[in-house]
Image 1 (cartoon, rainbow, N blue to C red):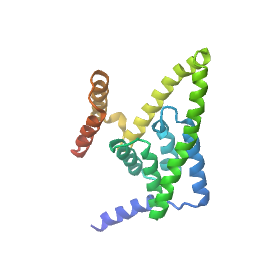
Image 2: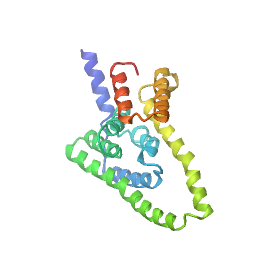
Image 3: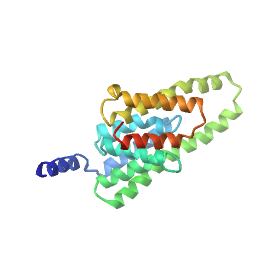
Image 4: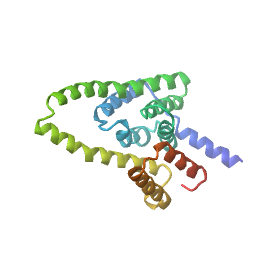
Length: 204
């Protein structure tokens, strides 16, 4: 029991960051940039968020990072909510529910505002110039970039529970899910529920 309590204390020490004003400004600046490069949605910049929040600054643990994404994906509403959940967890780790609320709002607004403004301006310009060869080439060229970013996101999330390269059940579920989405009209929420059940049963 004593060793168990010591392990819990070590884990808690690892995820309690000291965040000052400069850190909050840095977080805001990074999320403003994430917003502008999130082609295909905020989910595509998850690898960079993981690098910043978990690997570089240690503001979140791997488990908190993955849980934020999983909860946002499984809950009703836009999946952009994972950004607010990450901010909430950063604030809680910093030691205050008040900070958690401020951080959640800060992260969500900083991710939504620049990309929303850019999307409106780009959509208007693209509509007026939709017949130009450069515009058509740009749209076609962005497709593989978005797919690559989504694959990188999946790899980061899978890495939270070990080495995904050796986790054959994970790859089997991924392949079956991709096939079901491609060939059927089964709703994604059913697949998420099935994945949650398999994870709860310890099969993934």
